[in-house]
Length: 236
Ligand SMILES: [Fe+2]
Figure: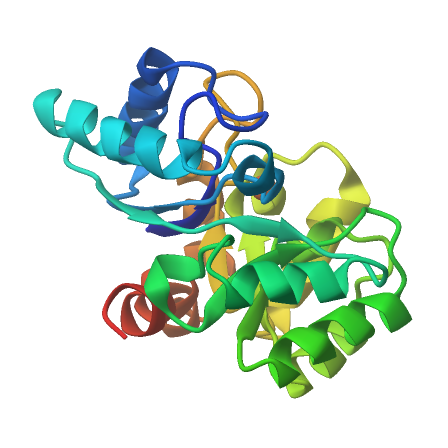
């Protein structure tokens, strides 16, 4: 799997708290079947402490290499979007304060859990019009989300990321159902763990991956789990 969404950079957001925890997350991810990761700290990390995310990312790459963990790391961010902050967000993208996903035109965006479809469409449209391709993070976790809404957002040019955790291990049924419906209708484009640590939503993907291959078109699942990410984010 290529995991395009992980809070694995140590000490920059509410994800990993130390280099040791990050290395353990990488070991866990590799054990579960992940060999490429885009590290995506929350966007506040880049305004609270400019320079720190990149420095910590380089440190983690070095430590992972020394520890001989066979996982490749790339760089990005998860940008929290709402209707009232879009001007500042687009400025931060334009000036490079916020990185895109591995230097491509793709940007990973999230919303407040209670955003409605109108605001999600508004934010998506502005990002698209500014020349970026928004990837909606953990789309299944929004109350408004449905296959209809996903269709509208994708029609506007957005892409959809689901958490593999949501497909099988998630305890809230509505989130699990949303994730499965998005797969059923082939609206999911990318997969991630959204892992925040070794205990809080750890990178536990193997059961979800197995479920996906058993229940949906395997060619489509391969695209979601790695081909799409490899083609447009890793080797564009
Ligand atoms: Fe996240």
